[in-house]
Length: 292
Image (cartoon, rainbow, N blue to C red; front, top):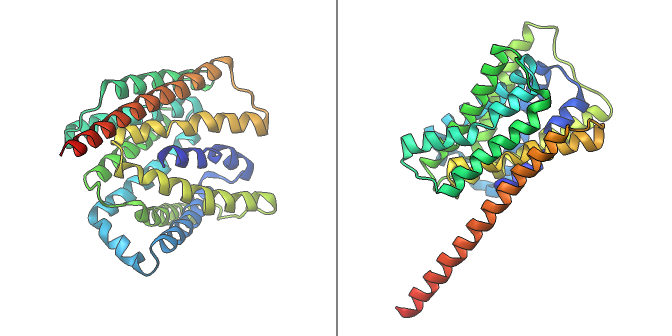
C-alpha cells in the first residue's frame, strides 16, 4: 500500500508545474479539494459508519492531521525559498528521523538491512538532487526540515495506535491547510483559479491522486515501522523525476540516473529479503502448527 501510494502521488511536482498557480493559491485549492477527496474515500469505505471512523482516531488523529498539515506547508514553502535539490536532500532524511523517533519513543528496533537501505537511499537522493543543490536560503532549508520532521513524527505517532486507521483524519489536514492559506491569501492579491487544462489537472491531482495516494500511505504504519514507511515514500522522488523528464523534457543529470538506480535497487533488494524472511516465518509457523 505504501509503495503504491507513493507511485500514485509521484506526478505531484509535475502537475504543480503544469497548473502554474502561486504557492498560496495552490495550497488553498490543494487543501479544499484534497479534503473533499479524503472525505469521499472515507464515505466510500465506511458508509454509515464514517463518523465512527473519525471518532476512533481520537486526539491522536488530531495530532496526525496537524503534523500532515505542517509537512504540506514545509514542502511547498521550502521549494519557494530554497533550491529544489536542497528540499529533496533534507526530505530524504525523513526515514532516518522516523527511525530515531521510533527508537526514542516507541523502543522499536530496526533490522540492519533497514538501516543499510536508509543510508543507501540517502546517498541516492543526494545524487538525484546534486545538480540542483546549492546554498539556498536558511529559511527555505528550515521549511524543508520542518516537512521532513513532521512527516517522520506523523508516522511515528500513528505507530502509537497501530490498530487504528488514521487516514480519515487527513480530511481535517486538508481543511487546516486551506484555512490557514486562505487567511494568508486575504493579505495578498486574492485567490485565482486556473482555467482550461490547468483546471482539469488541478482537479485530477488534488481531488483524485493526492487523496488516494496519501490514504494508502497513511495506512502504512498499520503494518510497517515508521522508518520503513518513510523509506518507501522515496519512490515518489525517483518516479517524479522521471515524470518531469518524460513530459516536460527536463533531462536529469547523469548522477540523477545513478541515484535513482541506487534508491530503486536498495528498495528492491530489501523488499526481496523481507519477502524471503516472511516466507520462512510462515513455513516455520505452519510446521509448528502441524506438530501441534
